[in-house]
Image (cartoon, rainbow, N blue to C red; front, side, top):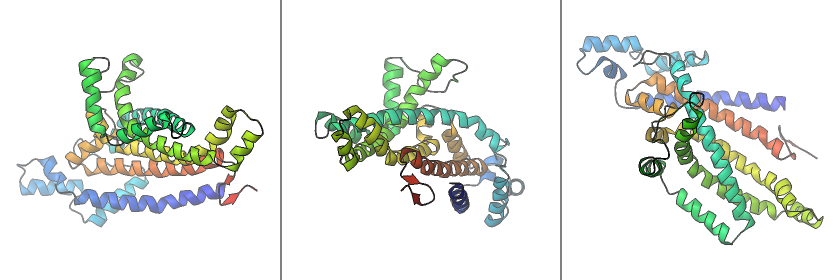
Length: 319
């Protein structure tokens, strides 16, 4: 187990290096000059050159990358071009909001997706299965931003049940906080829940056809025990991967949802950084998301051994 963890952690290093290079090259290839954004359109060439030198943008790309990578290794994300605040401080201010939204969405995704997928598998080719299939088809064709706007119009503007946007901290006002969280979390979770439902259904149908399920039923075990203790636990193994990937997507891909609901998370920070050509903010945020995503994949691999005792990390199987 220890050797496996060390091996996987070492494999993360080239992944992070390659990801950092891609992030740096893509961002610096975007048209626009951060120095011009900061100095203003009326800046003289001399002022613009001085601003570029102060930002380090007068150096060749390889030099700029190495300077940035050196700071990242020391967990120093640099300083924002526009606000002059440390990027690490800006990120730390936005991370709680994004984590709150992503964790709430994942919880909804798991509850809705696994419940619907289990129901569709247990009632295969009957009306619950058809309802779940229709739900998945409709949900996967609805864009997040469109669903978010519809929810705001109906529940906030028409009925007045929920606030249209912004975030309220739970410690300050729990009653308003959960209301402000419902719509963005549901909007973010809906598409993911359809994916989880489809994978859960397919996995459950495959497991229910296995010999050990027939053996458990032949022994006289109650159907509820067979489903929950034998079938569902093994069927969840591929679903774990989907949930982990979706959680990584929610952390880094909630830009649209956060913009629709004016949620002060990492997505809005990245959008603001891109619009102002604030390379340090965008680079620091993206490399953090990449690191979290690869660590999530490692955690998923480790969790396989818990859900399936036959799996032994390190390439060995239980005898």
